[in-house]
Length: 175
Image (cartoon, rainbow, N blue to C red; front, side, top):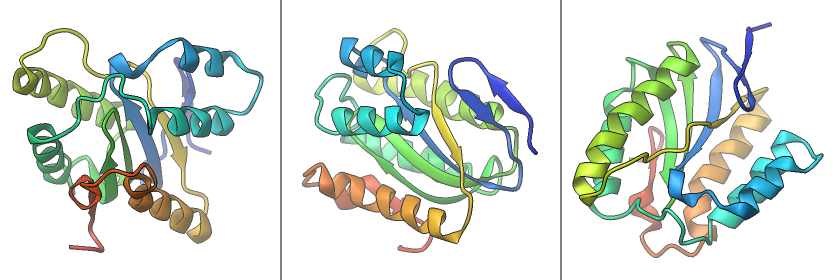
């Protein structure tokens, strides 16, 4: 069994396995999300409820226009270095990504969030914390789980009613 680390959520570091990861902008957090995180329900239920909420929230919705282009280029540029990239979608205030780990999960997330926060703040002419410190990760269990996660990532911008849904989704399978 891969080692489990805990800072907020327990993170499972599983090099060589597929991971589904979600991370959010810092400004997308509010009392509603903090209340959900305190509920006595599973982490999966918490994250699903938060995703449903943030899909329609305008809080921290910085991920559009030039920021989408930059993030897409950055995430693709780390393919075969940090991970074997499968797919991602960039929602207005959070990102869903699935990849096979080639490095420690904490290293991957530090690289993604650290390198992109500075540049996105410059693009947006803002300062301060950009990404929430925590992130949600789930090791993919089997082919059915992989297919479910892939469909979720692909369809998330569509279900949220985003008219630029094609721009927000990337997959190695659909170019």
